[in-house]
Length: 452
Image 1 (tube, one colour):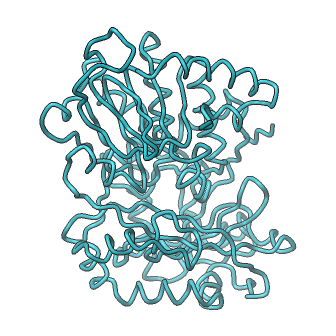
Image 2: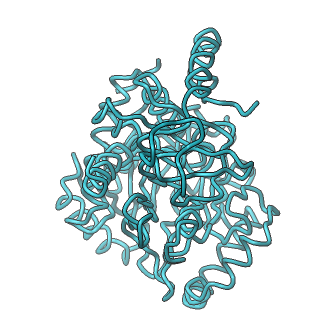
């Protein structure tokens, strides 16, 4: 189960070997010079956008596709700043779209990694009850997982917990051996490489600033209004297309508003800060160790996560980020911060969870407080065993009543442009695990709306 195995035009550099990259980039630059119009443009080079672009081009090889990404590389943000877990689908409401996509997505992810030779490890996960009051919730999770058809679930007692995780202490646990780990950024890059190999174009450093109906044909073409959508970058560059799909992650709401859509649901960024276990203490953790979720709080809680590079991450906390792509404690953007604070939905969420939020901030500042929570599961852990680690920023969609939007949201807007644009406003966690299944679902939606 362990497999080891001018503007920068196309992201071949990070996906291919140096020699392959040179010839591929030359070819793609030629294509880029001779073409500025496409059947479908996908805005956003994260794992969801790339999985969908891949799915669409495999279904419609006769159509032309382009992915537009604002960064210098693919999968830089949420796709490259996550825990790396392949989730099995335990937590989600039975019959819900999230549950179905996660279960199918995990199966597809393992198959894809096998086919492409991407290293992964099916190391399993324990959801551990450390107090008597958590046991009924743990049993309810077990029943939910069974209803979701999660593979190989079983309840285990304290003795079996120690057999699986010798340094973990708990009264009872839910054992999910189908849970695994992988480098999701590598997976996303492989989607991008496959997309390019079958004829798709990827343009980097193209930050979309405007999406509108064009009033005239592209310069130098005789296509009439075959490509009526004009996408312009912040540098004034233009790509013309018949249809647009946006998968903007942390900027999905702003991309939607560009084409005249509603400002809601609003994306509010939450940063999660991790600790890392010192290498000499890696023996303390074999697989994923998670808490029993507390329904009073909006986020999952701290957990132990082994990584494909051999490290072990502990955490994260969940605090409001002052910048949508701010991975450091003091990263700040006035517009992002102002947008968040001015949104009534965030204010309502904060007021409902004030004590919890203050606790999360405290634990983000004082490592000892985070370690104290982690010691509930591994008592031998001490503050001397950990270091500050990386952080990720989660694009959390909120409605105006302060509710976390926990399902997929699509939008197109109104008028002529609304029939040619599809915005993925929310692709909730676990979007990486579910990416291939999500790609199928979005491709279905694209085909239905645009009649491809």
